[in-house]
Length: 109
Image 1: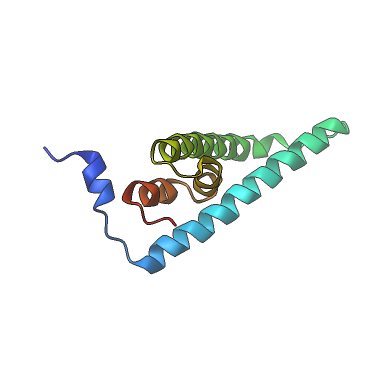
Image 2: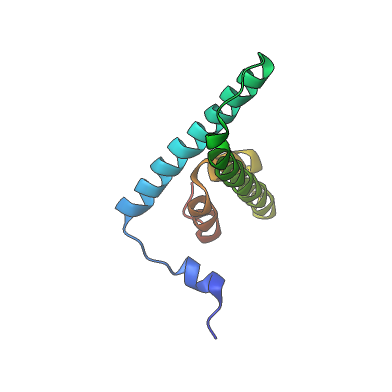
């Protein structure tokens, strides 16, 4: 049985797709943070967003939580490899799993 980790590390996607994933992930996570801050602001001033948007908030919160966990893992892994954990953690938070794969394969400078 082939290990899932080795499958992921041997994933050979063209550079174009990896860069596209990085850009889209950064835009979407930034948008999710802005969306959540907007929701907090509206709650602070006493307004409420329609209940129809609650599903979007749950998806957004799940994505941000997953990226936070990936950032923590990347920071920890960077410490083990004598690299800057803040740099790797923040980078991986914004680009997601691609950042973890780059860190694991030592492609990130």
